[in-house]
Length: 127
Image (tube, rainbow, N blue to C red; front, side, top):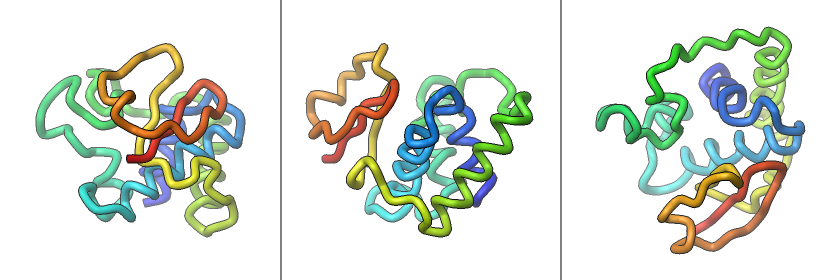
């Protein structure tokens, strides 16, 4: 579970500040704790894969590229953040967000949700 969470941090937020990485980690954990999403972290990050390329909840899972961390330092940092968040040592800066996107995209679903935070290059939402 920690490695799955670290993958999400690495592929979604490795260029972000530690706070930004913590925020992404919390969205994954918030989903695992919420109705309508799988209960396990690994299943949360794989959600939608069965529908094919471009249909995943997390785009890096369905982009056709290998999901193998190549930046050793960033991977070590992602594992550290995952560990700290899973142990409850980092509070949720997203206030319970279940969704987010990079600031450079405008998903159709965003206006239907309540924006709760912008952290780094990501915008976070609750229902």
